[in-house]
Amino acid sequence: AQSVTQLDSQVPVFEEAPVELRCNYSSSVSVYLFWYVQYPNQGLQLLLKYLSGSTLVKGINGFEAEFNKSQTSFHLRKPSVHISDTAEYFCAVSRDYGGSQGNLIFGKGTKLSVKP
Amino acid sequence: ETGVTQSPTHLIKTRGQQVTLRCSSQSGHNTVSWYQQALGQGPQFIFQYYREEENGRGNFPPRFSGLQFPNYSSELNVNALELDDSALYLCASSTAGSGTEAFFGQGTRLTVV
Image (cartoon, rainbow over all chains, first blue to last red; front, top):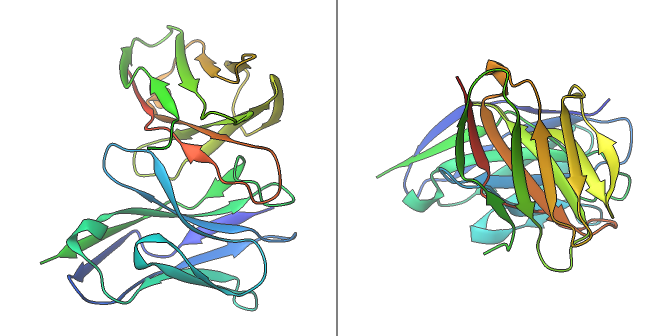
């Protein structure tokens, strides 16, 4: 069975500092991994995705993530955060062979709080 | 703007009642998925519809049901509401196929009292 664990429920960080949000997964099949962001009272927006190929994936808003198969991890990073990055971040794995995003298993989320 | 719209945005219902939530998918998308997001939790997959047929279901009881219409819009129906059904309900539309992106609506906040 597939599952996703986000290791930190809350991450406080100062503006312009680097941040890493951790995600570990378990899957017995090919893995397709995603990071979404959710701003207050809004739906989810895709930040980036790993389907195959290069293990370093670049997304929107300066975020990137690295797929590490041996450590079953897909950590999200940003070298310098802004106040506007304050939001909740979700890691997800696709249930579907081929990695379509209509059928996802999400982690419980990490609340990123950027302080001035 | 993603083009996925959900209605209503907020709703309050009494335990035991029935509710219908609606989702208009993005133009060109033929697949709609519904998720339940309880407070402080990640979204949980309820079911998916592809070309008007249910195409996968999560661990939700039969009182959660759905429909997809010829224009690919969708409804989520919940019967015999329970207090634990209080949550944000998210709809996502996509096309079928490898790696296709799902676009989420802003959700319907359901409160059961």
